[in-house]
Image 1: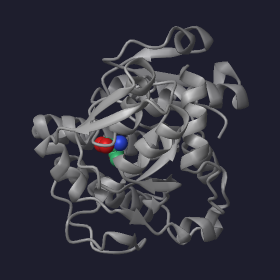
Image 2: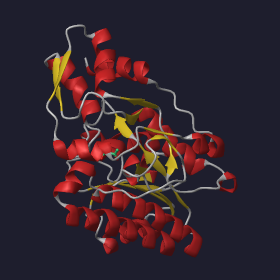
Image 3: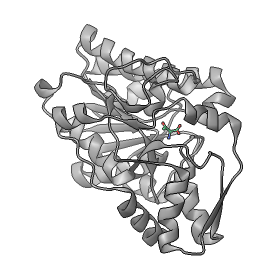
Image 4: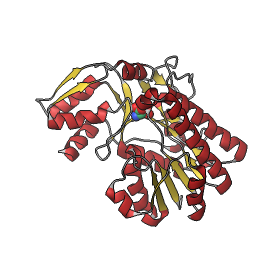
Length: 312
Ligand code: AKB
């Protein structure tokens, strides 16, 4: 990685990944692409920023070619809950965006990072210790675009030699950027509510267990897999990775240890609950640990402490 382009740079991951990559590779070598969301002023001021719809293949290729980009980190996509409200739009953005990135990478010889998700699994997948290679029959549009994306990335590697790599992210938790349109967003919103109102109304049932990860571990994972020796990789795309797995009830209990007056109640949203119920409760990420030494640093207690410290 020398010259890196990040799509979806104004989203939850991009807001933290862009400065991290700029620190490491130089501001002028990291090109941030955003679209609908207004960029953080630092993102805009610290290096090159372009506003572009990811479906604009010609516009994207012009930027890649003009700057000799060698790596594309493709983060732009609609998340699970939003995708259920506009499934055709989600297919268009998620799949045509990825197809553009892969075609440009084939022509311009770029490596590609594609984030898949726990959403690439479905209700018939074993939900405890979900294996790396298992049944993938998701029943959400977001999940369908994620499993299709994994397959398309594998195809571009096998057929055209494009250096594609990727992971299946769980819910990501960060104090720097608020997520939008996801099913796991509650695990970020709860901290703001705990500090402001000492109360949170959760849209998932108290016993809904899902995999989660604190953002510094997610950023480290992207850098690590993109810098790993490809000869050591038997898999390339869709590595299971997780750092912790908890229910809303367990997260609330951990927050209560530091804010004793905090309370939680539940008003279940049937759409997001059905999505969460179709996802694994806990993935087995031993293949990523073995192939490129994935090792998260944050557990539930450490993440809660840092989230509350940073937001107060
Ligand atoms: C979502 O909830 O849609 C995302 C994800 C798990 O991919 N955070």
